[in-house]
Length: 613
Image 1 (cartoon, one colour):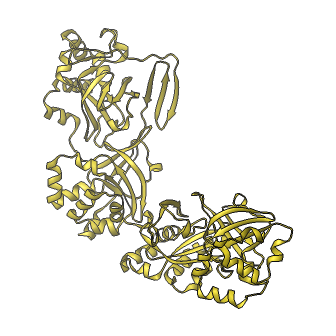
Image 2 (cartoon, one colour):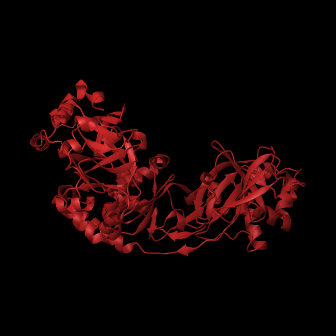
Image 3 (cartoon, one colour):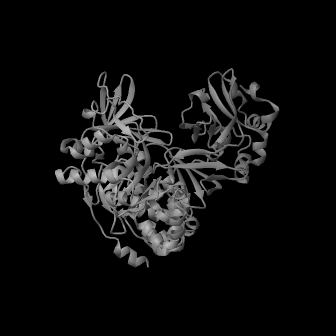
């Protein structure tokens, strides 16, 4: 073995071995593993380590030299992800393997690995290994004993998390913020986090990675999951290593069960942030600016618990300029707009039921929640990102700005001025049967309203049959009403959904920016109102059982065109998912949507608003 490594790049270490009389030991039969420091490593070692090595010069039992030698042949393939191995000195080395193919010994990378010798294997390294590097203490004790982490230690002890760390069976990394890092937060904000059990626990767990992470292994951006189940980004430049925006100190402390790094900033998880901090993190900048206009910083910063449905930036861009200009310039308008986007309490996605109604924070207008097969919705907004838990509530990011409307469907249609036939039909249907429509205030109904042009296209005979025959009128009107809110965003493109109406069912489909119901073009959709949601359509939806009368077509359109319904029941397999029935048919893709019930809750926001001024 000695003949193999007497090369120029490791001559300093080889000379030390020869001077110590270890040549005969390394030439004997048997298998060894030797970690060989380069000449540059000798030049760069600390003065204390150099002193230890020189003090033992010529001694075959030199602790520093024997710390580089293992009994047995250990190749990198045989090394585990995290492994402690005993050296000939009696002290232990920590071996680590990473997904970027790097292997380290005591956090020093192997420069050249698995160099075979007649009686073992050699690994070239860029540092002289120090037997005192790995402490006999645990990483928790290293933090407690250090003296720079008093706030962290106090939080660990008060939370009980310190016991969880001691019981962890695997090695770990503690990213330890110094006292100065904690003190960078405003005193009031820090106190609020540390006095909140859940927020404090989330903060502490976010500083622990459940496996060893060496700084030398960070050679580019790499995300690792913390014990809080959050991913944090490790990165580096030519001088330093960072976790998110926090810089690691040059020091790296190794204990019996892992590694400790010193951070100069806190890694604050979502659960320890307030709504204002979350809005900044997720670039919800328009929402944040309106909070300041409305004077709701204290309400959304210090109070809770609330659930907020916050529109993304694209949602605000889609709102009319007049609405946004008023919100930007009028504090009361901004306040009313924002309060309609929240409710009391923490509502996570797994606690939302279809048709659920919650009073908004404005204490006047309810929020109606829906569960669709592939999405969750509030009013006509689809939840794009759910369950961002904050210290003072839950934030859901949505794709629409929600605008309250106390107008009924009837009032909206009368204002539009081109729905007189459908309004007359609705009025007669309600007179014939009080339960025909059941359009309630704070309701969750969907109404498809045909234009007058669509009715005229039926022809006088067909129109008279609908408007003057009791049974035909009731069935036709009820075929335009569904008992649950159906917004366009709840339907995936290029799929056909069979939706239950009060009479039977209709087929809904989205293709690009076009939305159709039984083949009829929806000319204007997602008009929220006191009764639910309204879609304006270009055709009359004839009930399926009366389509023979209509020439076999599913509808008569205002343009005089018609379309057949593909309602074949052959080769059908029905799968129920979240209140939807997805029907797979041999010649088409269809989804059936069934109705479901609703619950109602109410709460108060007045105390918080008065507190926030």
